[in-house]
Length: 181
Image (cartoon, rainbow, N blue to C red):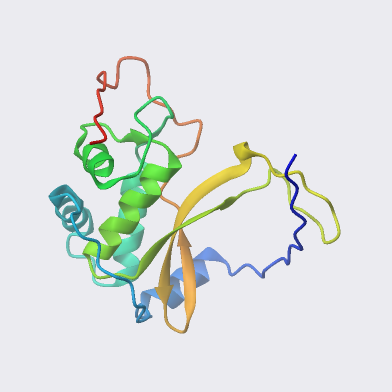
């Protein structure tokens, strides 16, 4: 029964190709983000392996995003995004999880490389919403992604989650026992 009324203001879209060219030459912005403490070692190890010799922050972020997006989307695995769960997620032979786990894993990997990243929770409506139009937002529209601060003063979206229809075949994933403690 809870209802929120929001005014949605459409934002101009910069073509991805042009944005990539701009960002390849841009430095990340200086943002005060407290360093995460207790992050599993696999986060930095995997981030370094996936980014290799990529010369720019943008190239490193694209490498992380693309590598993670080659995984599988499932909500059948253990839920959560705590450090222990993300360590387990990144340590699996086959990446499989939900958007929450992909986004948190990418943000932690970006932070381990010294890049100012944050996790964002929001909604993707199925259809574009015109000004003045009413939209009933449902949980199925919920999504989680990563934003990274670039100069001049802008947060750029990186979505590492595989498409929702890219699901693992039966038998691809080993049974899982997850202890959140």
